[in-house]
Image (cartoon, rainbow over all chains, first blue to last red):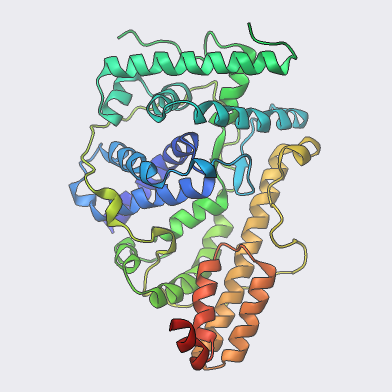
Length: 173
Length: 230
Protein backbone atom coordinates (compact mmCIF):
# COMPACT_ATOMS: atom_id res chain seq x y z
CA UNK A 1 0.00 0.00 0.00
CA UNK A 2 2.83 2.36 0.84
CA UNK A 3 4.40 1.59 -2.53
CA UNK A 4 1.19 2.37 -4.34
CA UNK A 5 0.81 5.63 -2.47
CA UNK A 6 4.35 6.54 -3.38
CA UNK A 7 3.72 5.77 -7.02
CA UNK A 8 0.53 7.84 -6.93
CA UNK A 9 2.42 10.74 -5.42
CA UNK A 10 5.09 10.43 -8.09
CA UNK A 11 2.45 10.40 -10.79
CA UNK A 12 0.69 13.44 -9.45
CA UNK A 13 3.90 15.40 -8.97
CA UNK A 14 5.80 14.69 -12.17
CA UNK A 15 3.71 13.25 -14.99
CA UNK A 16 2.91 16.60 -16.54
CA UNK A 17 6.54 17.73 -16.60
CA UNK A 18 7.57 14.47 -18.22
CA UNK A 19 4.73 14.40 -20.73
CA UNK A 20 5.30 18.05 -21.69
CA UNK A 21 9.04 17.56 -22.16
CA UNK A 22 8.40 14.52 -24.36
CA UNK A 23 5.97 16.55 -26.40
CA UNK A 24 8.59 19.21 -27.00
CA UNK A 25 10.99 16.49 -28.06
CA UNK A 26 8.60 15.72 -30.89
CA UNK A 27 6.39 12.92 -29.59
CA UNK A 28 2.69 13.01 -30.34
CA UNK A 29 0.34 13.41 -27.35
CA UNK A 30 -0.45 9.69 -27.50
CA UNK A 31 3.13 8.56 -27.76
CA UNK A 32 4.20 10.97 -25.03
CA UNK A 33 1.52 9.47 -22.77
CA UNK A 34 2.58 5.92 -23.59
CA UNK A 35 6.21 6.77 -22.96
CA UNK A 36 5.38 8.51 -19.70
CA UNK A 37 3.43 5.46 -18.63
CA UNK A 38 6.31 3.17 -19.54
CA UNK A 39 8.64 5.25 -17.41
CA UNK A 40 6.27 4.92 -14.46
CA UNK A 41 5.91 1.18 -14.96
CA UNK A 42 9.66 0.83 -14.86
CA UNK A 43 9.73 3.00 -11.75
CA UNK A 44 7.06 0.76 -10.20
CA UNK A 45 9.24 -2.28 -10.79
CA UNK A 46 12.26 -0.61 -9.28
CA UNK A 47 10.59 1.39 -6.58
CA UNK A 48 12.73 -0.10 -3.85
CA UNK A 49 15.88 1.00 -5.66
CA UNK A 50 14.80 4.62 -6.10
CA UNK A 51 16.02 6.82 -3.28
CA UNK A 52 13.56 9.17 -1.72
CA UNK A 53 14.04 12.53 -3.42
CA UNK A 54 15.38 10.95 -6.60
CA UNK A 55 12.02 10.02 -8.06
CA UNK A 56 11.84 12.86 -10.53
CA UNK A 57 15.38 12.27 -11.77
CA UNK A 58 14.71 8.55 -12.22
CA UNK A 59 11.46 9.10 -14.06
CA UNK A 60 12.82 11.87 -16.22
CA UNK A 61 15.97 10.09 -17.32
CA UNK A 62 14.02 6.88 -17.93
CA UNK A 63 11.45 8.74 -20.02
CA UNK A 64 14.14 10.50 -22.05
CA UNK A 65 15.84 7.16 -22.70
CA UNK A 66 12.55 5.63 -23.79
CA UNK A 67 11.80 8.62 -25.99
CA UNK A 68 15.00 8.03 -27.90
CA UNK A 69 13.73 4.54 -28.62
CA UNK A 70 10.21 5.64 -29.38
CA UNK A 71 11.17 8.68 -31.37
CA UNK A 72 8.97 9.16 -34.34
CA UNK A 73 9.55 12.54 -35.82
CA UNK A 74 6.88 11.77 -38.33
CA UNK A 75 4.41 11.65 -35.50
CA UNK A 76 5.14 15.21 -34.56
CA UNK A 77 1.60 16.33 -34.39
CA UNK A 78 0.06 19.65 -35.02
CA UNK A 79 -2.92 20.24 -32.83
CA UNK A 80 -4.76 17.04 -32.18
CA UNK A 81 -8.01 15.97 -30.73
CA UNK A 82 -6.52 14.49 -27.60
CA UNK A 83 -4.72 17.57 -26.46
CA UNK A 84 -6.09 20.15 -24.13
CA UNK A 85 -5.21 23.77 -24.47
CA UNK A 86 -5.21 25.23 -21.02
CA UNK A 87 -5.78 28.85 -21.30
CA UNK A 88 -5.25 31.64 -18.93
CA UNK A 89 -8.76 32.91 -18.14
CA UNK A 90 -7.60 36.39 -18.96
CA UNK A 91 -6.98 35.36 -22.57
CA UNK A 92 -9.84 36.30 -24.83
CA UNK A 93 -11.32 33.63 -27.08
CA UNK A 94 -10.23 35.42 -30.26
CA UNK A 95 -6.62 35.01 -29.16
CA UNK A 96 -6.91 31.26 -29.00
CA UNK A 97 -6.34 30.57 -32.67
CA UNK A 98 -3.15 32.56 -32.40
CA UNK A 99 -2.12 30.41 -29.47
CA UNK A 100 -2.74 27.20 -31.39
CA UNK A 101 -0.62 28.47 -34.25
CA UNK A 102 2.08 29.48 -31.80
CA UNK A 103 2.21 25.93 -30.51
CA UNK A 104 2.74 24.63 -34.02
CA UNK A 105 5.48 27.17 -34.61
CA UNK A 106 7.24 26.10 -31.43
CA UNK A 107 7.03 22.48 -32.53
CA UNK A 108 8.65 23.45 -35.80
CA UNK A 109 11.47 25.27 -34.06
CA UNK A 110 12.13 22.37 -31.70
CA UNK A 111 12.00 19.86 -34.55
CA UNK A 112 15.08 21.54 -36.01
CA UNK A 113 16.90 21.82 -32.70
CA UNK A 114 19.03 19.08 -31.16
CA UNK A 115 17.04 17.16 -28.51
CA UNK A 116 19.71 17.82 -25.85
CA UNK A 117 19.29 21.56 -26.36
CA UNK A 118 15.51 21.28 -26.38
CA UNK A 119 15.57 19.39 -23.08
CA UNK A 120 17.62 22.05 -21.30
CA UNK A 121 15.61 24.87 -22.85
CA UNK A 122 12.28 23.33 -21.83
CA UNK A 123 13.41 22.59 -18.29
CA UNK A 124 14.82 26.06 -17.76
CA UNK A 125 12.51 28.35 -19.72
CA UNK A 126 9.21 26.52 -19.45
CA UNK A 127 9.42 24.34 -16.36
CA UNK A 128 11.28 26.86 -14.22
CA UNK A 129 14.04 24.55 -13.03
CA UNK A 130 17.32 26.11 -11.96
CA UNK A 131 20.62 25.28 -13.65
CA UNK A 132 21.82 23.13 -10.71
CA UNK A 133 18.52 21.25 -10.73
CA UNK A 134 18.85 20.57 -14.44
CA UNK A 135 22.44 19.52 -13.94
CA UNK A 136 21.34 16.95 -11.37
CA UNK A 137 18.28 15.88 -13.29
CA UNK A 138 20.01 15.00 -16.54
CA UNK A 139 23.41 14.32 -15.03
CA UNK A 140 25.54 16.85 -16.86
CA UNK A 141 27.90 19.54 -15.48
CA UNK A 142 26.45 22.97 -14.77
CA UNK A 143 28.75 24.47 -17.38
CA UNK A 144 27.21 22.18 -19.98
CA UNK A 145 23.75 23.25 -18.87
CA UNK A 146 24.80 26.88 -19.37
CA UNK A 147 26.27 26.32 -22.82
CA UNK A 148 23.32 24.23 -23.99
CA UNK A 149 20.96 26.88 -22.73
CA UNK A 150 22.88 29.60 -24.57
CA UNK A 151 22.80 27.65 -27.81
CA UNK A 152 19.17 26.69 -27.41
CA UNK A 153 18.21 30.28 -26.74
CA UNK A 154 20.15 31.52 -29.74
CA UNK A 155 18.45 28.93 -31.95
CA UNK A 156 15.03 29.74 -30.56
CA UNK A 157 15.45 33.49 -30.85
CA UNK A 158 16.80 33.35 -34.38
CA UNK A 159 13.97 31.09 -35.51
CA UNK A 160 11.37 33.20 -33.72
CA UNK A 161 12.74 36.32 -35.31
CA UNK A 162 12.58 34.78 -38.78
CA UNK A 163 9.03 33.65 -38.17
CA UNK A 164 8.02 37.02 -36.83
CA UNK A 165 9.46 38.80 -39.82
CA UNK A 166 7.80 36.37 -42.19
CA UNK A 167 4.55 36.80 -40.33
CA UNK A 168 4.78 40.51 -40.76
CA UNK A 169 5.36 40.08 -44.46
CA UNK A 170 8.96 41.16 -44.42
CA UNK A 171 12.01 39.15 -45.30
CA UNK A 172 14.68 38.45 -42.74
CA UNK A 173 17.93 40.39 -43.16
CA UNK B 1 27.31 30.08 -12.99
CA UNK B 2 25.16 33.12 -12.57
CA UNK B 3 21.57 32.11 -13.15
CA UNK B 4 20.23 33.93 -16.20
CA UNK B 5 16.74 35.42 -16.14
CA UNK B 6 14.11 33.41 -17.90
CA UNK B 7 13.06 34.75 -21.25
CA UNK B 8 9.47 34.93 -20.15
CA UNK B 9 10.32 37.22 -17.29
CA UNK B 10 12.86 39.38 -19.04
CA UNK B 11 14.20 40.12 -22.47
CA UNK B 12 11.77 38.24 -24.71
CA UNK B 13 9.92 39.98 -27.49
CA UNK B 14 6.14 39.85 -27.52
CA UNK B 15 6.25 37.20 -30.23
CA UNK B 16 8.75 35.04 -28.33
CA UNK B 17 6.62 35.35 -25.22
CA UNK B 18 3.57 34.28 -27.18
CA UNK B 19 5.39 31.21 -28.47
CA UNK B 20 6.68 30.22 -25.05
CA UNK B 21 3.34 30.66 -23.34
CA UNK B 22 1.59 28.56 -25.96
CA UNK B 23 3.58 25.45 -25.11
CA UNK B 24 3.93 26.11 -21.40
CA UNK B 25 0.16 25.71 -21.05
CA UNK B 26 -0.05 22.33 -22.71
CA UNK B 27 -1.03 19.35 -20.60
CA UNK B 28 -2.21 15.82 -21.27
CA UNK B 29 -5.94 15.65 -21.81
CA UNK B 30 -8.20 14.09 -19.20
CA UNK B 31 -8.50 11.03 -21.42
CA UNK B 32 -4.75 10.57 -21.76
CA UNK B 33 -4.25 11.09 -18.04
CA UNK B 34 -6.96 8.57 -17.30
CA UNK B 35 -5.34 6.11 -19.69
CA UNK B 36 -1.97 6.48 -18.01
CA UNK B 37 -3.54 6.03 -14.57
CA UNK B 38 -5.42 2.94 -15.70
CA UNK B 39 -2.28 1.50 -17.22
CA UNK B 40 -0.49 1.97 -13.92
CA UNK B 41 -3.33 0.53 -11.86
CA UNK B 42 -3.74 3.81 -10.02
CA UNK B 43 -7.48 3.64 -10.42
CA UNK B 44 -9.73 1.96 -7.93
CA UNK B 45 -8.77 -0.48 -5.21
CA UNK B 46 -6.39 -2.46 -7.38
CA UNK B 47 -2.81 -3.05 -6.44
CA UNK B 48 -0.28 -1.45 -8.73
CA UNK B 49 2.04 -4.42 -8.31
CA UNK B 50 -0.40 -6.74 -10.00
CA UNK B 51 -0.58 -4.26 -12.85
CA UNK B 52 3.10 -4.68 -13.49
CA UNK B 53 2.79 -8.45 -13.37
CA UNK B 54 -0.32 -8.49 -15.52
CA UNK B 55 1.48 -6.42 -18.10
CA UNK B 56 3.55 -9.44 -18.91
CA UNK B 57 0.57 -11.78 -18.92
CA UNK B 58 -1.29 -13.28 -21.84
CA UNK B 59 -3.18 -11.22 -24.34
CA UNK B 60 -6.43 -12.92 -23.41
CA UNK B 61 -5.92 -12.05 -19.79
CA UNK B 62 -5.33 -8.48 -20.81
CA UNK B 63 -8.60 -8.33 -22.70
CA UNK B 64 -10.58 -9.51 -19.73
CA UNK B 65 -8.68 -7.26 -17.41
CA UNK B 66 -8.82 -4.11 -19.49
CA UNK B 67 -12.48 -4.43 -20.26
CA UNK B 68 -13.29 -5.28 -16.67
CA UNK B 69 -11.12 -2.52 -15.37
CA UNK B 70 -12.67 -0.13 -17.81
CA UNK B 71 -15.86 -0.21 -15.80
CA UNK B 72 -13.92 0.88 -12.77
CA UNK B 73 -12.31 3.57 -14.84
CA UNK B 74 -15.69 5.10 -15.56
CA UNK B 75 -16.09 6.15 -11.99
CA UNK B 76 -12.64 7.66 -11.93
CA UNK B 77 -12.95 9.38 -15.25
CA UNK B 78 -16.09 11.01 -13.99
CA UNK B 79 -14.23 12.51 -11.10
CA UNK B 80 -11.16 13.55 -13.04
CA UNK B 81 -10.15 17.11 -12.96
CA UNK B 82 -10.92 18.04 -16.51
CA UNK B 83 -9.27 21.41 -16.78
CA UNK B 84 -6.91 21.66 -13.87
CA UNK B 85 -5.46 24.94 -12.86
CA UNK B 86 -6.37 26.84 -15.97
CA UNK B 87 -5.01 30.00 -14.47
CA UNK B 88 -1.41 28.85 -14.55
CA UNK B 89 0.56 31.24 -16.65
CA UNK B 90 3.96 30.43 -18.03
CA UNK B 91 5.02 33.90 -17.04
CA UNK B 92 4.90 32.80 -13.45
CA UNK B 93 7.60 30.19 -13.70
CA UNK B 94 6.63 27.36 -11.37
CA UNK B 95 8.81 27.00 -8.33
CA UNK B 96 10.41 23.59 -8.39
CA UNK B 97 11.72 23.13 -4.90
CA UNK B 98 12.60 19.48 -5.01
CA UNK B 99 16.20 18.80 -5.70
CA UNK B 100 16.81 15.40 -7.13
CA UNK B 101 19.90 13.32 -7.45
CA UNK B 102 20.36 11.35 -10.64
CA UNK B 103 19.55 7.71 -10.53
CA UNK B 104 20.78 4.96 -12.84
CA UNK B 105 18.43 3.88 -15.54
CA UNK B 106 20.19 0.99 -17.19
CA UNK B 107 18.31 -1.09 -19.69
CA UNK B 108 15.04 0.37 -18.62
CA UNK B 109 13.49 0.38 -22.05
CA UNK B 110 13.64 -3.33 -22.48
CA UNK B 111 11.81 -4.05 -19.27
CA UNK B 112 8.37 -3.29 -20.56
CA UNK B 113 6.44 -5.04 -23.25
CA UNK B 114 3.10 -3.39 -23.87
CA UNK B 115 2.42 -0.92 -21.13
CA UNK B 116 -0.45 0.78 -22.91
CA UNK B 117 -2.48 -2.37 -22.71
CA UNK B 118 -1.46 -3.21 -19.20
CA UNK B 119 -4.04 -3.84 -16.56
CA UNK B 120 -4.37 -6.02 -13.51
CA UNK B 121 -5.33 -9.53 -14.48
CA UNK B 122 -7.61 -9.97 -11.52
CA UNK B 123 -9.71 -6.95 -12.32
CA UNK B 124 -13.14 -8.28 -11.63
CA UNK B 125 -15.80 -7.29 -14.09
CA UNK B 126 -18.30 -5.05 -12.41
CA UNK B 127 -21.79 -4.17 -13.46
CA UNK B 128 -22.08 -2.83 -16.97
CA UNK B 129 -21.47 0.86 -17.29
CA UNK B 130 -24.52 2.91 -18.00
CA UNK B 131 -24.94 3.58 -21.66
CA UNK B 132 -25.58 7.16 -22.41
CA UNK B 133 -27.49 8.80 -25.18
CA UNK B 134 -26.03 7.93 -28.55
CA UNK B 135 -25.69 9.71 -31.81
CA UNK B 136 -24.39 13.01 -30.58
CA UNK B 137 -20.89 12.44 -31.88
CA UNK B 138 -19.74 11.43 -35.31
CA UNK B 139 -17.21 8.59 -35.02
CA UNK B 140 -13.71 9.67 -35.69
CA UNK B 141 -14.52 13.35 -35.54
CA UNK B 142 -12.10 15.39 -33.47
CA UNK B 143 -13.47 16.09 -30.05
CA UNK B 144 -11.23 19.04 -29.41
CA UNK B 145 -11.56 21.92 -31.78
CA UNK B 146 -8.57 22.86 -33.85
CA UNK B 147 -7.38 26.33 -34.61
CA UNK B 148 -10.27 27.42 -36.77
CA UNK B 149 -13.22 26.46 -34.55
CA UNK B 150 -11.36 27.75 -31.54
CA UNK B 151 -11.81 31.22 -32.82
CA UNK B 152 -15.50 30.98 -32.26
CA UNK B 153 -15.44 29.10 -29.00
CA UNK B 154 -14.90 30.40 -25.55
CA UNK B 155 -11.90 28.59 -24.13
CA UNK B 156 -12.58 27.00 -20.76
CA UNK B 157 -16.08 25.75 -21.68
CA UNK B 158 -14.68 24.33 -24.92
CA UNK B 159 -11.99 22.43 -23.04
CA UNK B 160 -14.54 21.17 -20.54
CA UNK B 161 -16.89 20.10 -23.28
CA UNK B 162 -14.08 18.21 -24.99
CA UNK B 163 -13.24 16.44 -21.74
CA UNK B 164 -16.87 15.55 -21.12
CA UNK B 165 -17.16 14.22 -24.65
CA UNK B 166 -14.05 12.09 -24.11
CA UNK B 167 -15.61 10.67 -20.95
CA UNK B 168 -18.90 9.94 -22.67
CA UNK B 169 -17.18 8.14 -25.52
CA UNK B 170 -15.03 6.11 -23.15
CA UNK B 171 -18.08 5.05 -21.16
CA UNK B 172 -19.81 3.98 -24.31
CA UNK B 173 -16.76 2.06 -25.57
CA UNK B 174 -16.49 0.25 -22.25
CA UNK B 175 -20.19 -0.61 -22.21
CA UNK B 176 -20.04 -2.11 -25.69
CA UNK B 177 -16.97 -4.20 -24.96
CA UNK B 178 -18.35 -5.25 -21.62
CA UNK B 179 -21.49 -6.43 -23.39
CA UNK B 180 -19.41 -8.41 -25.87
CA UNK B 181 -17.36 -9.98 -23.12
CA UNK B 182 -20.45 -10.92 -21.11
CA UNK B 183 -21.97 -12.49 -24.22
CA UNK B 184 -18.81 -14.51 -24.79
CA UNK B 185 -18.84 -15.70 -21.21
CA UNK B 186 -22.33 -17.10 -21.60
CA UNK B 187 -21.34 -18.65 -24.94
CA UNK B 188 -23.39 -16.33 -27.14
CA UNK B 189 -20.87 -15.51 -29.87
CA UNK B 190 -23.48 -14.04 -32.17
CA UNK B 191 -24.45 -11.43 -29.56
CA UNK B 192 -20.77 -10.72 -28.92
CA UNK B 193 -20.17 -10.16 -32.63
CA UNK B 194 -23.15 -7.81 -32.78
CA UNK B 195 -21.73 -5.73 -29.93
CA UNK B 196 -18.33 -5.69 -31.58
CA UNK B 197 -19.81 -4.67 -34.93
CA UNK B 198 -21.55 -1.79 -33.24
CA UNK B 199 -18.28 -0.90 -31.55
CA UNK B 200 -16.39 -0.88 -34.84
CA UNK B 201 -19.03 1.27 -36.51
CA UNK B 202 -19.15 3.78 -33.72
CA UNK B 203 -15.48 3.81 -32.75
CA UNK B 204 -13.30 2.87 -35.71
CA UNK B 205 -10.33 4.38 -33.91
CA UNK B 206 -11.51 3.89 -30.36
CA UNK B 207 -9.29 4.00 -27.31
CA UNK B 208 -10.04 0.33 -26.66
CA UNK B 209 -9.74 -0.79 -30.29
CA UNK B 210 -6.95 -3.21 -29.45
CA UNK B 211 -9.10 -4.90 -26.83
CA UNK B 212 -12.01 -5.00 -29.26
CA UNK B 213 -9.84 -6.80 -31.82
CA UNK B 214 -8.84 -9.43 -29.31
CA UNK B 215 -12.46 -9.96 -28.27
CA UNK B 216 -13.39 -10.18 -31.93
CA UNK B 217 -10.99 -13.06 -32.37
CA UNK B 218 -12.54 -14.86 -29.44
CA UNK B 219 -15.97 -14.29 -30.93
CA UNK B 220 -15.07 -15.82 -34.27
CA UNK B 221 -16.30 -19.36 -34.97
CA UNK B 222 -13.64 -21.91 -34.05
CA UNK B 223 -13.12 -22.90 -37.70
CA UNK B 224 -12.47 -19.33 -38.83
CA UNK B 225 -10.16 -18.83 -35.90
CA UNK B 226 -7.99 -21.83 -36.70
CA UNK B 227 -7.90 -20.77 -40.37
CA UNK B 228 -6.72 -17.31 -39.37
CA UNK B 229 -4.09 -18.77 -37.09
CA UNK B 230 -2.74 -20.91 -39.92
